[in-house]
Length: 290
Image 1 (cartoon, rainbow, N blue to C red):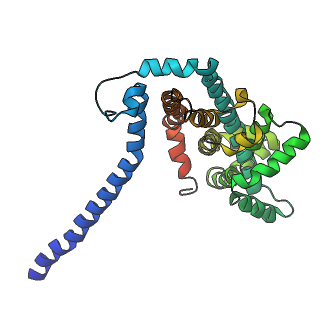
Image 2: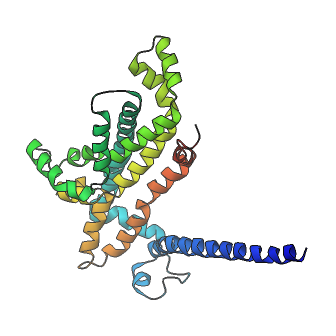
């Protein structure tokens, strides 16, 4: 009896220590994530004098509405155009790209064709290639096609995502049983009808998950637009804010609008994850339980 009595606290102590360690790590991670966001919110709500002073945390000198007005009035309302450009690049590009990626992944999973696994190996190899490495080849191709400094020079390359194809195959394996497809074919449905009426509905969580990943990547895309574009009217928000931040070293009035623009730039991503998190969470468990 005594051995059991002494074993209880001994086994409980590592458990308590482990939980305390986990909570400490989680707390530090949360602070590391939220403190820059808190600074951005506070800085965006202050006027320029408070921004450059030491009283950023003081509950005075608020100028949030004025900063928003200055942001959309700066350089003839250029920020609003950049925002619309980013929405077109990211939302439309991510939607089309997600559909293409999932369709390709479905084909790799459900169909047999020559050199299938070798081609899929090339897709996996492409996942490991940094996007910055592809910027120069893409620029040369766009130059040959005559689309440099146009909307299409940035929009078309972001439609193709090797990682999305890989995820599409995983989702197809986890969500689309072969028996359901065979039943649809026996009912007389063609391959396209089977995919769009049966398989695509089952793949909805996968489409949303790939969409969110691609939306984040395109929205934060910086190097490709910088290489392709010279017309400021075609800039996305990321490149436009970089240009303003570079100009702020000469004209300090750009600093408040850059900070406010950075705050508004994260809003679409937050909304997308909040509104689609139900599909995203279920999508991340694809293949875990069949």
